[in-house]
Image 1 (cartoon, rainbow, N blue to C red):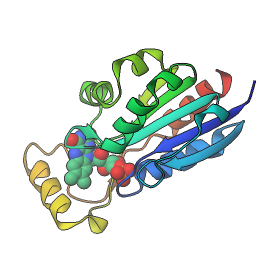
Image 2: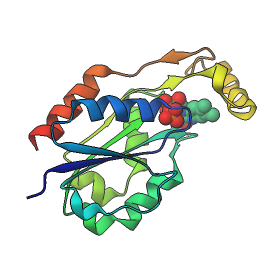
Image 3: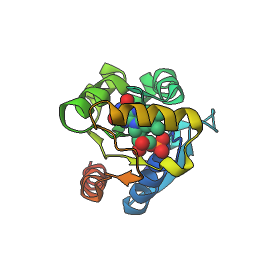
Image 4: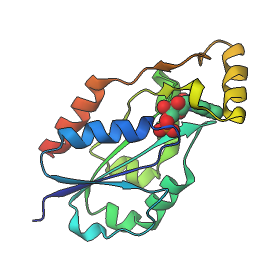
Length: 166
Ligand SMILES: Cc1cc2nc3c(=O)[nH]c(=O)nc-3n(C[C@H](O)[C@H](O)[C@H](O)COP(=O)(O)O)c2cc1C
C-alpha cells in the first residue's frame, strides 16, 4: 500500500494556504500540497489519503474545490479523506457552511471534517471585499472590520492526528 497524502486547497488571502502548510508539517507520511486554483490536473492514484480544503465567501466554498470534489468523487470514495474549511463563522453556522461545502457522499465518507476558524486581513483585501466586510461588520457585528484571526492550532493538531492514525 502506498503511503502518501495530498492536501488540496484553495485560498484567496492565504489563510487556508497557511493552515494547509501547518497541517503539511504535522503529517507523518510523504505529503504533497496542491493549489486547485492553479493546478487542474492531478494523479490521485499515488495517494491513499486526500485532504480537501477551501475558504468561505458569502456562504460558499471556492468553485475550484467543488469541481475537484465532483471530478474525482469516485476515486476519493476509495481513499481516506479529510475535509476542512476556513471561515469566520463558528458553532452551528460554521457546521452549516461545512455541510454545504462538500458533496454529501464525501462528507459521510470522510474520516474527519472540521472548520479551523479564519483570518481577515482587511489591509490586503480588494475594495469590493473590504466593502462587503464593513457592511457585514455593521450588520450585527459578527465579522469584525479589523485584521483578526480565529484559527485554532488545536483543531489543526487534532485533524493531523486523526489523519495520521487512519
Ligand atoms: C468578502 C468576504 C466574505 C466572507 N464571507 C464569509 C461567510 O459568508 N462566512 C464565513 O464564515 N466567513 C466569511 N468570510 C471569512 C473568510 O472565510 C475567512 O477570512 C477565511 O479565513 C479566508 O480564507 P482564505 O484567505 O484562505 O481565502 C468572508 C470574507 C470576506 C473577505
